[in-house]
Image 1 (tube, rainbow, N blue to C red):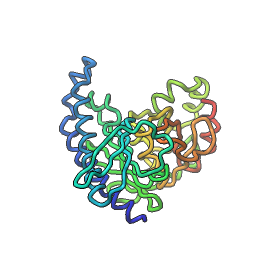
Image 2 (image 1 turned 180 degrees about the vertical axis):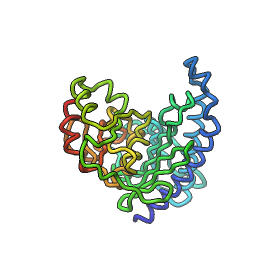
Image 3 (image 1 turned 135 degrees about the vertical axis):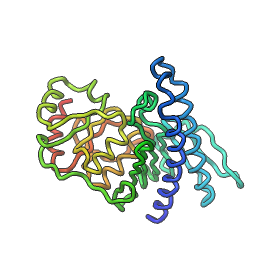
Image 4 (image 1 turned 180 degrees about the horizontal axis):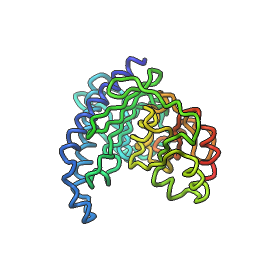
Length: 283
């Protein structure tokens, strides 16, 4: 079965590489639009990326099997069905309890950064069955970094095995806090965390921050109210690299309860998880 997930992972890599070419070509061309608060050009590249990913994945899927498969692209659920020689796609209105095969796609996470010419955006894809993530990829096309994981087979960056840091104390930790968490955090709890941590940063994407935790560049990523397509691809990579996943308000993360649900999570190296939870539970 894991061989099947590895094949799907291979197909997802090809899809993000093709989409990455599109975004790389558009990178830096949208700055004037962003300054005018006109994101039409950025949206065009995001739509092209999404189309290429969907087409690539579904062609590979239906070339090998005839099962229906759901596709959630940036929060828009659809159902793809084989029609013999090709496939059709229709709206999927009630996906919350769906437990069949599913591709979850973030075709351009952090579009604002992309539009402004900031090198902090990514593409993410996860493959799910039974509401469990079985394989995922997160691709940074500008820096040409591909993170990927298959359930039970570890996490990798450009083909090399990665694991979380061995940092033991928050005082030695480099911590990423997302914008939404910063906005919603209790000021005293946030101040306490900033005083405790060695360094605090904020990144534009959830996908890359989870992957940076996975490879030990940072020691924890704190993300609030993240969309399904933004957090799910990076979550498996962080878990397979040894990260502890918990809920922002405290308690262990127990997996996906509903498809396309939003979530607030913390991914951290295990040794600081308890100390970090004592502070973030006050958020």
